[in-house]
Image (cartoon, rainbow, N blue to C red; front, side, top):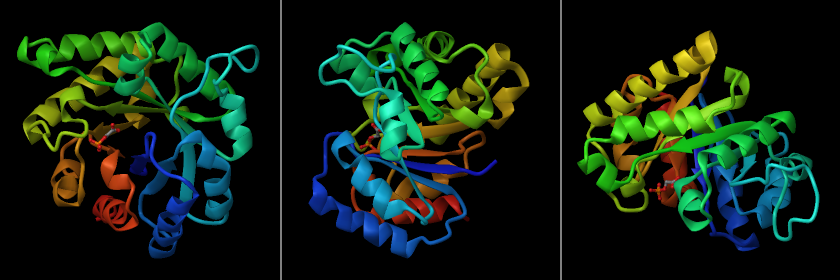
Length: 246
Ligand code: PGA
């Protein structure tokens, strides 16, 4: 299985930031892992043109479950594909919190993504209060059951484990805690989608940076990372890409 370094720019970046993308592409012409950046929708077309004939893939950060219609401000999976995206993140905790997205909505978005020909990166993760209450695995199990489409296949599904309390905080779970959750996710996916689960990339996300990437990538069942802040600079994201290739 090829590992995946995915960057999530969130609501950051204007055209000036594309210089970082040029630097990343130049520094990593043939990485050992798949390399993906998910910029704001306004930059997808630009970034996809820059990334043409390079090792960089481009993705969206969200999509609407419908293909088109009266949904002001929303973007469909078909539109992302048309703009040059190959992947889309669905169910990021910031979407779940800021926009009240439910597991059922996240699942509908994942279905739309796959039918548009995109790889869906489905995000799950517990809050700090849920971890403190010993509910981490129960929460993640529920999110997986509710958000992963029935019949999902490895070629078009990635699952990202992102503890909400680790996002943008500089805090990370212990390696043993990451291992426990990733093993649990693999088992729960196997119960849900059978043998396909073995080939689904499981990303860890939450305060991944060059200094902790290698140790996190050595954890069993960690098949890559979803990186926020450290994906904005080519040097930092490139170091994480390189850590996945060793
Ligand atoms: P972070 O964000 O790397 O800045 O913690 C990760 C994410 O939210 O995907």
